[in-house]
Image (cartoon, rainbow, N blue to C red; front, side, top):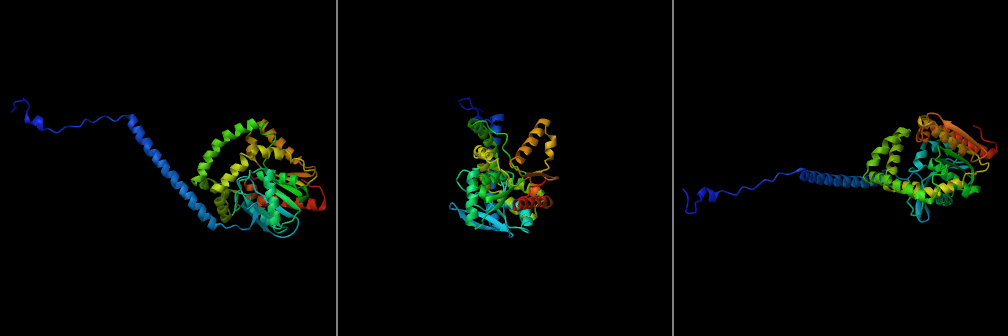
Amino acid sequence: MTDVSGVTPSETTAPHQPVRRKRGVLFWTRRVLKYLVIGLVVVVLLGVVYQTVATAIDKRNFPPPGQLFNVDGRQMHIHCMGAGNPTVILEAGGFSFSVEWYWVQRQLAQTTRVCAYDRAGTGWSESSPTPRSGVQIARELRTLLAEAGIPGPYVLVGHSLGGILTRIYASQYPDDVIGIALVDTAFLRPRSFHDQGEFDQWKAQNDLLQAFLWALVRTGVLRFVIGGEIQAMGYPPDIAAAFTALKSTNQSFDTYYAEAIPARWELGEQSIAAENLGALPLMVLWADHPEVLEMPAEDQEIFKAIQQDVAAYSSNSAVRTIAGSDHGSIIGNEQYAQQVSDAILDVMEAAQTGDPLTR
């Protein structure tokens, strides 16, 4: 039946059927990206919260073993053990602090007074806005020793970056130092950069990597990475836990960056100026570095030449290699650390008797 218009009732009363448009690849790509971004933001926020909470808990669980003293309006930490003269001062490597000397400090404390300290911004020491040049770090250490009532003379011992810093201290305050031991020291020879422009280019490129590491630290990821590495070095479990906790802080990374990147050019200049130690007793200890054997022959020769250059910093030096050790285990493993301690005692003896060091 139709009405006068010629339209059937069913046609006038039938509901409107929506047209379904086919969703293409672009739609689903945008949706997937949207949820990926949301998920990433949530993960990052959770990581930041975790890092903040973990840092607060670690601060409570791992109080400073030594004492805090005011240096330029900021608290710096130093931990001394044993009794006797001369006092041994232990300088940690880059991205590290006093705890790395756990074994060496306890071994030496049976013979003499030995102090491990934390540079500004590392371990239990508060950070400083002052650029982290070697000369500035040496000045802060001298002030700390004065505030703590620890008179010289000193035997300085430096691991990695600390090896450069000990030489700079000796060049700035030669009357304070009667001997040095360099433990798998860092080195900046041959000259790393030809001019300031080349350094600026290197820094810009390196900052990209540092930004990635910065993110790993801020989200707590680095805690899981370095924890296993520190345990493998040979420290007792409780010391490894403290080492991991304080090395994983935002402050620790920021200080590492300040020492290793912006200060690199000035540190290199200061290191070169501190290469002549006269006849100061100098013990140079190297880890085994088996990876060197895998390098091209040319690189192996460069490495050997650098080792010879370091030994030539003093006319009274001795060089030893601690077989089986690597850069971390040379002081993290109790047996390797004992060889380091014995070598430091040899430096003390040479300084006190005037006898030359022997290999």
